[in-house]
Length: 114
Length: 115
Image (spheres, rainbow over the protein chains, first blue to last red):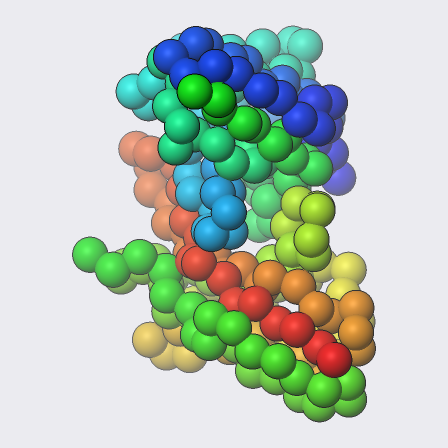
């Protein structure tokens, strides 16, 4: 089974600054997928970024990028130029290539302040 | 294109009753999964269906059941509701191809309150 750990229950960042959310995971699979989802107060789970484990290049989506360290089983999310609309819960999740269930961490609550 | 759609968005049920939640995946997606998210926690996997077949089941009691229809929409049924079933139920639609791998999108969820 895969486990995902998010060690930061809450974080705060000022508008326009950069923040990094941490995630570690445990898996015995050789290939798998990693995801970051954003869940604002509306509770819809929004896909932020995804990474395939066999791709060494870190994924990037506009202001969002990841630092994927496969050997360390670490998958952190960097948000640049933080905006008030980035305030939300952020969940890290893993999916094995042969599996079907996303395994979620407990989430990090991010507050962006003016 | 429409995203993953779920209905109803909110509902209140009494203990012991039964509930049916519905989900329509993104057009072209053949896989639908269901997750339960209780307040303050990450979502927990309940079921996945692909091409109308159950591919996986999480650690939930037999009171929970689901099915997928020929148009790939899905229903989640929960019988004999307990107070602890109160949660946000999320439906996810997924698509896999050789170029982009596996991508999973969620609907807005169905809020179930059991009183």
